Structure formats: C-alpha cells, structure tokens
Image (cartoon, rainbow, N blue to C red; front, top):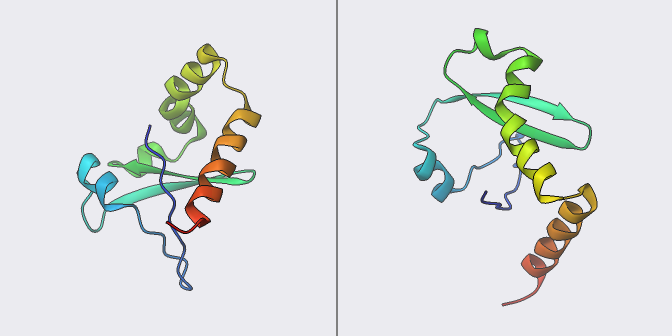
Length: 94
C-alpha cells in the first residue's frame, strides 16, 4: 500500500497524488464516500453511490486490509511510529 502526504487547501480540497490517480484510473468528477474514523478520514471511491452508503460497505472494503494487518502482527503504535518517521523525514531539508 502506498502512503503519500498531501495538504488541504483553504477551501477544504485535498489532492490525491498524481501517481495514485493514474494507478487507480481516477478521473475528474469521480465520487468518494468520506468516512470519519476517530482521528482518521478515509476516502472510498464509489461507482454506485446509493449502494455504498452503509457501514457494511465500509467493512467489506477494508476487511482484507485489517485481516492482513492482524496476520502480520502490526499494531496501531507501529503505524503511528512509521507515520511520525515519514513526517519527520519530509520536513528535513534535502
């Protein structure tokens, strides 16, 4: 899974990095569900907006990711440490 850092504009717009857009075939006007998960916000691309509005759809979308994380023994603190390390390196001058 790729991880990138992006910024939100004063209008609340967030850019999905170009490489990710190209890899997923995202085009202008695509629709996304926006999930508020405690201190995280998750975007999920949808084709059929009405069919995707339930939490069951969210659970199905992420069940394989959660299963892989559990199988690998990954812990929330591991993810937090990795993100902190990435953010620190992104702030350091090249």
